[in-house]
Amino acid sequence: MGLASYTAMNELREMYCWLIGAVVASVLLTDAAQAEAQWQSHESILAAAAEAVRLQTSNGADRVETVAQPLDPRVRLKRCEQPLVADVPYSRKQSARVTAQVRCVGASPWKIHVPVRLALFRTVVVAERSLARDSLLTAGDISLAQRDVGVLDYGYLTASDQAIGNRLRRGVDAGEALTPGNLEIPALVKRGQRVTLTAQSGGVSVRMAGIAQADGTRGEVIKVENLNSGRLIQAIVRSAQSVEVLLQ
Image 1: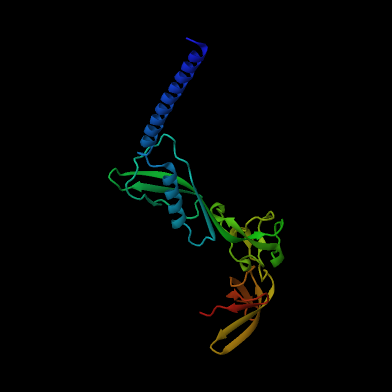
Image 2: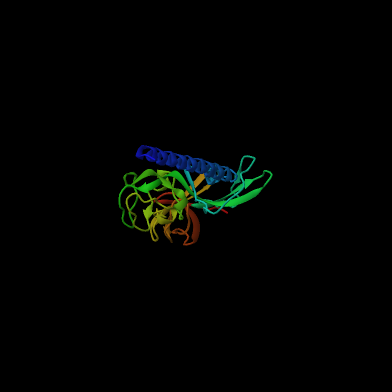
């Protein structure tokens, strides 16, 4: 056998082996694809869970973000013949972690619980700059910004007038969301202060001098001593100088 013939036979043998390998690989890939097609894709399950959480918890939010936690790669569920059904049976208000339930109601029913990370963004009141404790808030001290309210465990404010005129119980950093519990309404009337007592009945109004027996904010009921009679009277704080007597 000549060298040319030997080389040609080797090339033919290599081509034959390559062809056989390609056929085998194609068969294996086809079998793998067919086997994989028997299972419900994780992507479809996660998408159904995230959408269910978004739809059920979006009330009042300006923007909602949901991210479903990846499933264990070993999880295999039969491909559902019907569209997946998803809901949130155990939702909690303002929770950053929600569990969605995804179900198949086809011939081979199944269900799975999927944790979903939830972010609910609303426009809230934040500090425009770092503010010290006991700061009396003005319009220049605050601004509005979007924050994930799911992580604001101590509440939040949604309008500037809820903060302006209040005093901080503790200092806050720039950009920090203000909470109702950190605000203190300053007293309009101080204990020992001289005030005007006003009593109204029908169209008649009577004014008397009095001494406040406690600090009081607007609308708060405090005791006031009537300087004419010396009696202690329950009265509502109306302004920094006047209180209104509560008539029985």
